[in-house]
Each structure stands twice: as C-alpha cells, then as structure tokens.
Image (tube, helix red, strand yellow):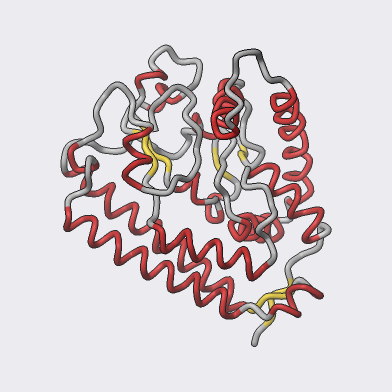
Length: 279
C-alpha cells in the first residue's frame, strides 16, 4: 500500500492489492509480479493454512457453541497453526526481498501504521484476538478503548461533505483515509507494541513497508511517497475464513476491527470467556 493514508484492508487478489496501492515509486521486480517459483511455494503455504482452517471448522459442534459458547481445544490448535503458516509464508517472501536488495523496513517499536482502522476482518479473527485478551485479562480495558474510537468513527460516518461520491466503497475508503490522518493509536497498542501481536488479524499481519519507518507517519511530508504493500493470502484462505464465520454465526459482524470487536463482545459473548473443552 502506498497512497496517503491507504487503509489496511483485504482485497480479492494479492497482486491487484499490491499494484492498486503502489505509490509513486515502483515495487521491486520480485513483487510485480511474483516469480513463478515463489508463487508456487506461497500457494503450498496457503493450501496448508486453508486445510487447518477447514479442520477448525469441522471441529465445531454447533449446539455447544450456540448454547454454551464452547469450542474444542483442537479448534484453537488448528486456528493458531493456520496463522503460523501464513506468517511463515510472509517470512519466505520477505527473505527473497531482502536478498534482492529491497528489505522490508518494519521493526519492533514502529507503530505508524497502527493508526488505521483495519477493515476486511473476519469474525473468527475477532474471536481469536478476544481469546488473547481474555487470557491476558484485558478485555474490559480494550473494550473501553474501542468504544472511544468507535465514537470518533461514528462522527466521521455522520459527516458527509458535498461532492462525495454516493458509491459506498468510495465513501468507506475516504473515511478510512480520514481516520488514519487523525493519528489515533489502535486500542490494542501498549506503548508502541501490539498487545495482541500473536492474535492480530490478517489485515495487520500482511501490511509491510519498504520505506523508512517515519515515512509511514501520516503527518510526515514523505508519507505520500512511502512504498507499502499488502501481502495477501489467496482465495482458499479467505473462502475457509468465510465458511468458519458461517459455522460460528459470525457473518453479520462488522468487518471493521473496532466495530466488529464491540459487537462480538456484547452480542456474541456477553463479556464471557470462550469455554475450551477437550473432545
């Protein structure tokens, strides 16, 4: 992603996402498009991740989830493995970038991209981060912080300037840009570190920058020229995430991280913990 304030989101294709949000500078040749051998290896990673997501879905016992919010431990094991495989696929590509002379500049302590409103988040990703917050005992704190951000987002949504296209996607993109420009820290940030790093959703996992970290700060004069991109998984992963959401009855959650999280906490879990059971 490279346009000013380009939103962290998910698209239908890894390659169109990279090109659509490329900045004035060109992406490295290794990304535009990916060489066949790298694309094949990525496909293997993604197929394996999709298999684990499928196994997680098949482990769900509908009545137990609907009545007791209970899931088998194997569900969590498969979900964690799927995200680990996707992380490994990213490291595989990033290592090729580094060897080609175009290293990613993201590093611990850099949180300039964490002022965005991630969109395209699935319900099961929200479930996963809710589990992480439950383990750390920080659900209530995160909920209050999300409420504060949601109020700001709601104000942005109520304000529609004249001349704005009636197209819903264009309106959303504009609002995401505006929110990013307000430089509001993600509610899950603790200092400059992500408090849910192990359970962060895909839109956050797949976002990278080839430019100096400070260029990613919305107020920096070089921000419009920062070269950023999303390394998205393929269709099999997204299809399995959608099927998982359907199996868990989470399809109606907002795909905006903060809004979806609030809905999940109140309407799905009622502030209760997920019951993990051995089957």
